[in-house]
Image 1 (tube, rainbow, N blue to C red):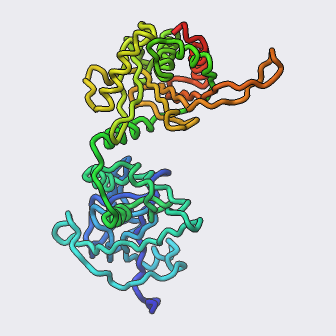
Image 2 (cartoon, rainbow, N blue to C red; image 1 turned 60 degrees about the horizontal axis):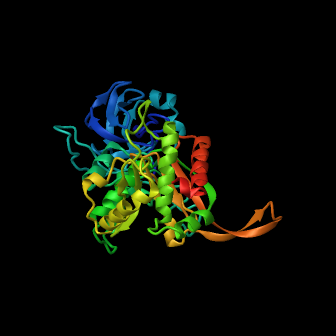
Image 3 (cartoon, one colour; image 1 turned 90 degrees about the horizontal axis):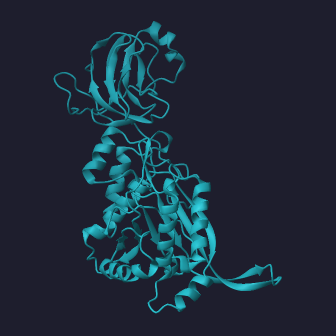
Length: 413
């Protein structure tokens, strides 16, 4: 049933576009009570975004007839926050007579927290259109942006629960532009309780936190195939044998000592260079990875590092590493080839700019220019993951090429 032409003219109070990247805002203050007369250009509400507190103003004078916004709630841009009864002249000027008439059905009232006296809000949340998947069969809508914008209330709730934005990557947002709202978060949390849940170990939480902090940087990876036949032949002749990862660690230490400009990390507008070449190496432990560190790895020959390396591996697997043998390294070696992987893109630790990865060795055909024929060689893919703020592709390529050359001359290690 539509109102008659003599019915009051109700102008919707709309959450405005408060900035190019703003998708929603949180109500923090209501300045008028329902029934109050409002002058033009007066702030009806104050809303908070992740950037500032701003006012939602009245486009003309009138009487505040309805208020569906609740203090502490977040509303998407374009949401109707209430209605202002305006004069026939203002309705004509604002084009209200050309728009479909607004429903005058009274919403259910409840006292909004934080509003005193007569400032009683009618806290009916605006209806939100459900987000439909753009491609059927996907676990979340393909166009959903995830939690790229977090309202102040959302941040507070996530901080209370110990959640990060990455934890909401699978949440389909129902807000403007597919943004995740506080209601989406609460529904997501309720749904989680229906699943089998096990507590994460302290090791897993620590690894997750380190990787989350690392991923805030622009990381890149370069790849180079490295022949290992000379290295393997050298190793076979040694009485006490070093593993391929220790060969690579020693080669990386020498390379970083030769190229001090890449052996650093960016803090503000300065590159901080290490006092010594300390190299870590990844060791799989129970429910995680530990990174023991060999100090001054550039100053000791390979044969002198073997006993220290083996001792640290045993301590790491038993999770008995002393504090003096962890942390403070400038780079890490990881041998993912032990799992049969030929290539990967590992992530450097937050305090490091470089991570050298080793793939599994494979026998592959190699063209021998002197013999004019293909010959079998043992080859592995080596990857160098790096902080692109500190290194460029050329420097990373030269570093990886130098490591390859040293592995081809193991007697120099």
